[in-house]
Image (cartoon, rainbow, N blue to C red; front, top):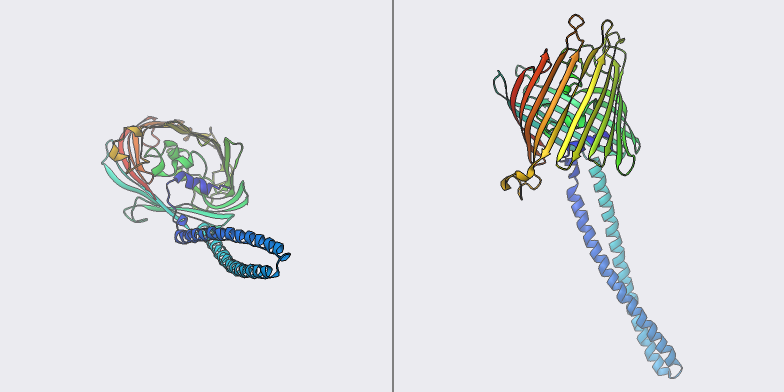
Length: 461
């Protein structure tokens, strides 16, 4: 069963797992032993062929002896002695061959035990990976900034065929935690899976809430744009982690279609909903402002690895009394057609209110990426960088927040255009350049009226 843990690692794609190489020396030794054993077995097969030829000659000699016995006793005695001598030699040779075969069998058995132990060691070894981003930017009316935005450590393992774990720890803005220079450490994911059947596993721990295009947008270096979509700030909170218990799984529906799913019981969002979005409604780990628990689920359909469609739903009480519900629905997709890749999401959250109309959060984005790697000069691809990729990127974002303040009843709307490129000389180093321009109607949501130049360098190891 492919759990979400494997999907995440698949999304990272580039993470080089230490666990995958930890047993390499012993595996190579086992491979060498296997090669030597094969060579010895080949030689023994040739010896067996010679032995069979010897036996055939012996049968012919015995037949000749029988024919000679009828005519001359001296001739029979001489022939019998010769045959006996040959038989003694063959028996000695067969004994030697049997000894060699026993030795080879012992070697093969030892080699098989070594390979089994190596395989178990690899499967149970920890896999350590890391990714991060550095961003330089300039917004209108502000000073330019240099920011080591994040450094992430990913740790995973498979201590048992049916048990696995995955964790992700973020150090943001490379500064002292809680000090005057800011910065924070955040446990974004830390869960354990227990496989019940191939298509079903029980998951418990800190999970990324599967609402929106999480796999595509969560890992900053792999995202085609530098800045997260506006919907990640205003609707589905950026890095939305929560304590959760649920089920995950995937299965083939046909030769072309594949299904994956996640469904959790989580703490859910709290009452601190704002005009700028739901980011502050995320609650602290181990606390809940009411007795109600939220339910969130995501179902994904994949067609030949070229098309992905996702559906998400969320519902849970958010107020302190546990009487007012927040309900959300989402649609996400990713479609690759030759050199063109389209990605996007559309989502909505509605928060009930005791008086007045429900507060509404909705929006989404569409992103296009077009591969133009063929224009790269030879020194930026070729033999040095055979997998180099250059893509032109465009993204359109839109968010709308309405009916938050009963006294004002004014919607906040904002949209943004992003144009740029993404260059990957290898799968572990990524350079991006973006120009962003945003506009707001009535009141701003994230940036308001703004334009910015951004450059980033990302790595994934």
